[in-house]
Image 1: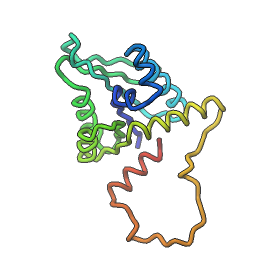
Image 2: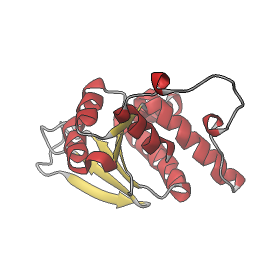
Image 3: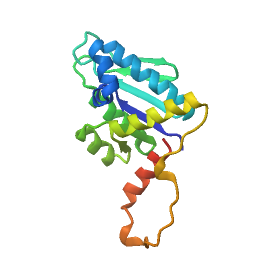
Length: 174
């Protein structure tokens, strides 16, 4: 099953200290910085990526969709929020979607439609690791993925609910 990463663009930019500093210079600079990080990530993990930005106060009555470096970029149409576009994509993609946002309304909607979610700051850490891995020419593993010896028993009492386990499996593929 191919994953489709759907990113709330401005939410991710404003949650990141690096990208928000770039956005302070200009909005376009912040978007370009995010797209550069995503392009580096896409070289290592070839998932389908869609970034959605607000253009609710723009003058276009149609949704604007472009592709850059293998990443789909969507600007919402006039009067529509990026949140609505993200919800529409999450409802369509369902289990294939991983929604990247810190907006609780979008997270709740995505979970109700069987899409996995990941916090913007957590995803930024994955982007940073991918950027580092590309510079080193290899792949970097998460510290969570390592095995450690333990005598603690793990039985059904410690098992996460099925929905959370499915979500974690998808997020581990990032």
